[in-house]
Length: 388
Image (cartoon, rainbow, N blue to C red; front, side, top):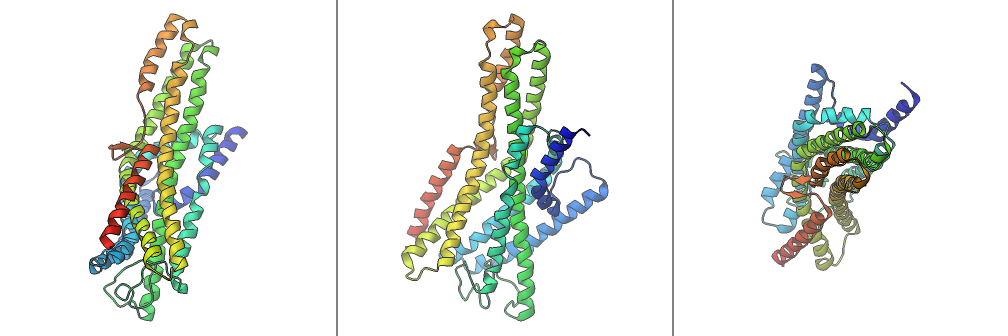
């Protein structure tokens, strides 16, 4: 292996290292070459984490939601953990089912990891896993030190509080049961956060890699008139463009349902957090600073999380449009007639907009993000009227 390829491979490994570790831990990292035993072990890890999140977070949270359904504040406090838990479980199921379609895509990224633009774009997202690790540590361990970020009542927390509003069929106020339940809940929360970070970072990795390849392709289209072998270079550009369009189609097929779930869950959570913050500031004389900081940080995180999704979709759509303008702005009038005619099918193909969608219903763009924020703000006013 020559030095340039080795350097590119090392850069690729450095860019995806944390993302690969988090997804391999859950058995979700796509691999093109796996034997039967490796596939079985991956599936068992996915099953174990799926059952852990369902049994330790979702079922007790839904049980608690049924008990407290008549109290709006407790319902909203419960849905802070139930909605992300449902989102996480659905993400795991969808990504696991679509993982085989991503195998070739990951292998293609590894082979093309020596391209400078693709490498620099992929490096932009590699450190996003650290805020999630800090978040799960604070979220789970704050309750053990008596610092609570939740709405505590005797109904949901008869003894020492849990980090998540849950209700178990056994008594957790006694010493061994409480500690064991807390440990299981901690690891389940860790897997939930890892799911969020891993699957989202994989999307960023793939999209930024595709955008880097599209940028390289755009420069090749702009330089077509400098090549003596025009038709051979044009054929190579068209083949690369079709390959990238197939890669975008794989991402769209894998993530369109995840996008729809994310928009629904984040829209609901944004409305709930906004309601809790306003209710906390207006109806309580002694505002707990820890809870207020927690709610504001979670609202900011949801805002930034959804914004990043929409920004990624916007960047991808812009890069695809730039391919169209690169071909359209060719000085066709100084080219030979046969060369100019060959550009017409490419212009027709690249003119069609390419974008990611949420459930194949609406595009993932910044305009969609603004519409989501406006809709969530409207539901905040509805919740405030219901609690008045």
